[in-house]
Image 1 (tube, rainbow, N blue to C red):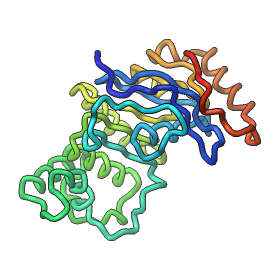
Image 2 (image 1 turned 180 degrees about the vertical axis):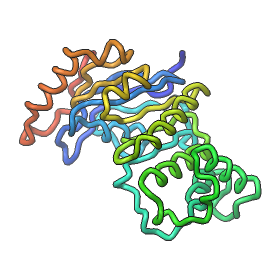
Image 3 (image 1 turned 30 degrees about the vertical axis):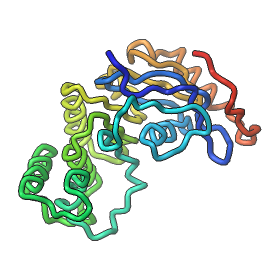
Length: 250
């Protein structure tokens, strides 16, 4: 299977302090992968680099000729401002802005696609509701509907189930499974190890370095999880700036 995303000696830093060290590996096209690891492991940093919103300190993310429009990225809920006066329909419609264009209005077809997307996430009839009036679970459904309208071949999700009710989590996991069945590449930052075991066939275990990467059943064993925990406990916030030219050999 051809690669959707390749990491080549990828090093990510904040103010030259290491966040992710010299990562090498491949997300195969059509794969469904969870990125897991301790708090501060660099999971969100890595997914931002894959999305193209964070520039590497060294190495590169190779997207194999994937255009930006083919990548759908959902950041953490805390990074999204819900105070702007937008309706649910307008928010979902933003998923189609590349096909609509900056100076054209949405067509009837786009409006119907937005209604269909809302129905798919269980929010039929919510079109004119303000996003500020929604619960956390309802708003996350809206953001998944926006991804549906974007129709991306690669979907990046950063902690999509944080502070979300169990029913919404179940419904959105079903949608992720459908995306996987359609051959889309889905990469999600997650914390719930049992959830990963049940729903994600591939796992990248990260603790600022790649601990292990492969089939979930092989990766999420006690030894690997212990290694990740030990590495997290020995992080030194006063470490010297990262030597981005050194290479990790996996």
